[in-house]
Length: 265
Ligand code: ACM
Image (cartoon, rainbow, N blue to C red):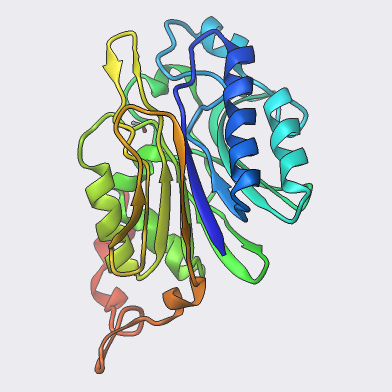
């Protein structure tokens, strides 16, 4: 299975240009026979809004908006794509990741851990992160800052994810390393598609990457260039949860002693 991350610089207030950038990544993904593609968080809209009004003008409904239609159409050729979308709904805006496979809208995950000023524009999602099946492989979805909550990758793995797809607009410098750890502690692949550029003084770190189940980076992009990086993976490597011949990553846990983890404060 050929997995890819697309890296780009979405421009605030330039939806048409952003759509062209997405189309160009989709074209490159086609040329490279990619099966599963991840695009950055908020790839339709840019990130550093200066008002709720501005955020609203860039948002689209899923699955009828122009980005959704483009992604859906790309997925018709037996492909899965997960992309970050500034989503307009009757209940306000959400920072969402939409998944299309085989021409169908599979799921929309609405980010549950909002970072900094995202809390001014977006409603927090209230549903568990999803795991979707595509061609016999199980893919979990989370968005950017979800990385700092190890519970996210853990719940995805416990729900059966073999690969975690992770649209991002990374600001803090630790995520790419932390995702290697998420891979190790859950024995899963991860694919982080990050954005580049500086928007209204906020710098994003690029370095999109794919990690394997032992935390090795299979591929990585530069900090400051748009592009596509791919890796051929065997998702079944994630089925082996033996850490030593006597230690199993799932069965050796002691949830009876982790009660605090499920309390709010
Ligand atoms: C982030 O969650 N976009 C930092």
